Length: 229
Length: 401
Ligand SMILES: Nc1ncnc2c1ncn2[C@@H]1O[C@H](COP(=O)(O)OP(=O)(O)OP(=O)(O)O)[C@@H](O)[C@H]1O
Ligand SMILES: [Mg+2]
Image (cartoon, rainbow over all chains, first blue to last red; front, side):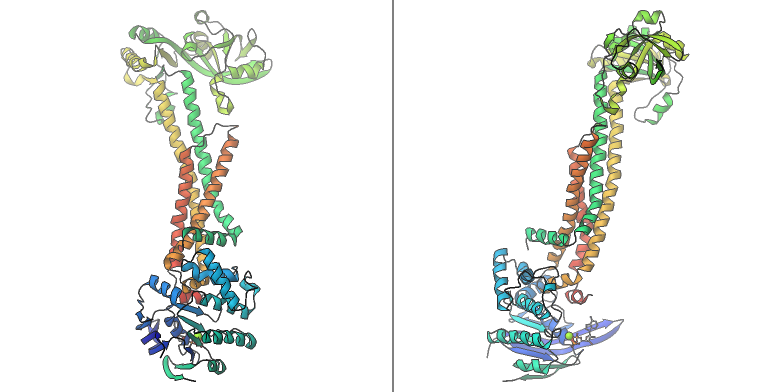
């Protein structure tokens, strides 16, 4: 069995609004092994994004622990969380979240800037990654000069450029038409065959079919966890 | 991220919003340039006064009526209205009572409206003795000075300073001509050599005319000298002479009736007064710098709000709170520093341009103060928006619309 790279134990997330407590996640535990391609499914509001944010160290759980490569993440230190996000996590968002008026190349370089990689090496890595997602001709384009699918590829290149431990994609095809959506999925498929560890949130059973493991959430709890083929 | 990365980042951010950056800098530019300009004017004034006083000679003592407290300039104005209790006989007493007094002259002053061939000018007119010219280091350029014989005979003769001479006679020699002073005819006996260093203020010392003391008493309808001017043998004797003069005059007058003013006291007081003005001018200008700083804070707060999603994304890919803090702080510092540099250049150019009219001196301290202050303002007013940016929660920031 491949080594374990991510484990979350008894994760709970509560939101407090005007004194009313809303439980978005309760007692969620799961383990991800190296090379796994996992889809997370569930109705809207079931806590998929919340879970992804906690796994990606973007948000803190109310209770429970996150382990990355068997190392327990200290949720109290912003400094440490930033370092984990930079080194271990590659996050792909539904809304792409590229910097405006910033070239595709500079967008992809961004995580490397915070990893203190020298400018020259940064550029080389970013160019290589853009080529890998098929955008070698668009490196100087601003996001506004790219199609939605191309923008999401830039975002994927940005997520991959640090060679992260795990790639998290929250509805990466949600804002795309079916054709560019399919291309993006193909990209994830290719990454998976090259050995990348991926967690992907989707509403689409079709998309989920690409994954080797499907976790279903409802009302903040895991209701099923199937490992296919 | 190292400093040069932050600087590049800040420059790029400022470039994407050039107009706003320039307008924000404007506050700092105006503040810094006015600090430099106003301080350079104040300093120029001090320099000017100092050189003027030095040209009068540092071994001069003025005996004025009334009590003048140089530490408290308020009473200086009232002394002008004090009835003089000085007498011409005091001069003799002073010369007898002190071994270090070289010359002494009474002076009585009034406004001089001088007319020559339909042209009328106004100048400072003083009635004096022959000695006065030696005391004040005046020399004749043409003709002769007022002599003691003129004083004894109450002659209606006048010696013109450079400015009234030029104003009335242009380049031609006034000596031998007659001018009218309040309807009385005076023979122009001499013209003084120019002393002033030129410029609008520089004409002051040359803007005088002199007539014999006795003639002046009659002309101004006075009976006592307004002032006694004394010159000591050397500069080292000034202290001794002022003690002697005090002692001599106290035999006849009360403490409050007169003031012995040394040239150096006067100079110190005036420079002190001018330096207070200089600092005050600089201070007023510094307030506009403060306003500029608030402008920077305002724009940085707007910028942080506008770029909330950017901040969230940067955090999501690994920016630490310190990275974000530094990014915005350096942006604010660059804004104010650029504004400061442009302000220094404009202030210096303005001060050079003004030099044609008023003497100005750009002092290193005002430049240092202005640039240091503008950088400081960038830090002080940039830190609050930067802290706000660094504390943003990444998820909330990414959701921000
Ligand atoms: N900041 C917040 N404050 C209060 N409630 C929140 C907050 N963020 C999320 N929630 C609530 O938590 C629940 C889970 O939200 P989450 O975004 O994880 O859902 P999701 O499964 O991703 O839904 P979708 O498929 O629509 O994206 C929702 O009911 C949501 O209203
Ligand atoms: Mg969601």
